[in-house]
Length: 393
Picture 1 (cartoon, helix red, strand yellow):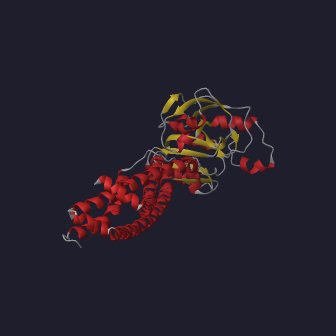
Picture 2: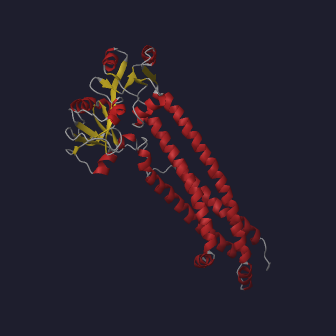
Picture 3: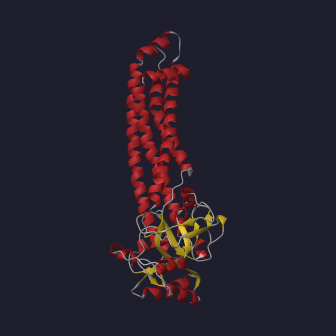
């Protein structure tokens, strides 16, 4: 029966390929949309969990949050490092972390900070940076550029790949982070004093870099300060005090990123609705093609009935046939969605988002099962109707 089903499928391969293609595209889009929305949401939630306050130059709250949490977008500018010292002496904080940015390594952002910034990011190998020009790199940076402990990295001025090189002051790799499936995998971390040293020892005279240098942290400056206050009251004390300064922007990263997350969830819902519409259209396409196949197979079915094959056996034949189509389509849809994740990984990495190809959520299996059921359902309905007929109709 199985071999006969395969032969029967080969005869009608054009129609069956149309069914497979429609199922693969719609199911692949649904699976991809769900996977991306979940990974982005989890990345945002986990990243915003530690610090309850970010202080930076006045400007966009979303830009400040995305720059410091996901290392994307441009820094808003710089503020004096004196604020870091002031916060550390206030007695209202558990953690005060300076944050600088302005250079890159082959497009990967370089963050100048302190080891405390990587407190919850374990090292895969090596040691944390402690001296000027030492650096800890993310797992994706190490893998992509085949970097090991002790290797030197010649960085580039600016956040792109076309800036002038800091050939006189290369960074030395002292540690490699474990894979985190976050923006940390695509980033290079060093001391904020390293950033000061690089920009203090080299002069950039090109006129087209004047605007870019305004957002860089030279000696005595940082791009932002990440703060973990001691408690609820201390948070409001600090927030009220620094918010009075018109030159500063004070944000709660969880609040800002929650708004970003709501936009992501809304976009995901829209995609889910579109996928649902496509799946409904697939049911119609599969139903029509199934009816056409059964109509074309009337003589074939009559001949099988004449030689004594029961309608139940004939029904099994077509159920096996559509079951194979459903399984192949679902498998291809899963493969397609995760291939797209791999292709999109390098694209969204520049936006501070890391997509893992190997993340498969339980709901994805649920979607795959639903798609399989949809692919077999029209045939089951037609066959059940046929199986009730016991004559040579």
